[in-house]
Length: 272
Image: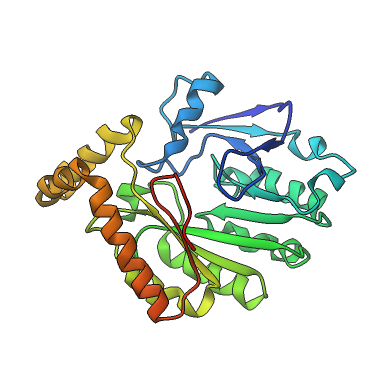
């Protein structure tokens, strides 16, 4: 892992995400090295030649870039971790995310933190002080079988669930972000059954096979789930039809069990 300390020019930037006005990314790159990660497009802007998942740039001055007057962000929404994980392993040493949280703890804005890491429970003392905070744990499988194939550097699934329970116990609003849903592989119903007692809402996102990740995903399938290769090709020959079917199943399931949810399919719209 190549870790480099850098100086950022800005830290709160405008967002193109649905339901988000601004984003904060304390790092460039991510050592979780998820094979499906859409954020590898960041290499076009960062100038890195290293493989995605093999480098992390630490924005050591990030907290200093937070303005003292935060009125500009009143009633806005800010996502922490849109193209990196703010609690990836480097955070244990550098505490960039923690320092940012200290600076914005009194902000009158909706804060969403997206992570795969149980390291977040280190900052419960700060998180409890936020008035409008949501922590979303990204989970794509219900157990740790083959987790390292998909997310080599991320916390195991059980650790995420334990952290989820701890946050919920401390009255911090929690979301399980079932993302991405791998056809046939991701048992999203079982994820809900395992986490329902500790979760305020579920978000769902389908697996988008971007050109930048296509080779890695199909290589993983060929080497570990060869029996699914034909099925995946059929699905992605007419993926809208497939995902429309999954979406209907999610809606039925969530309505039946009175589960709050949002669906982020196709990156074009949101259904609640």
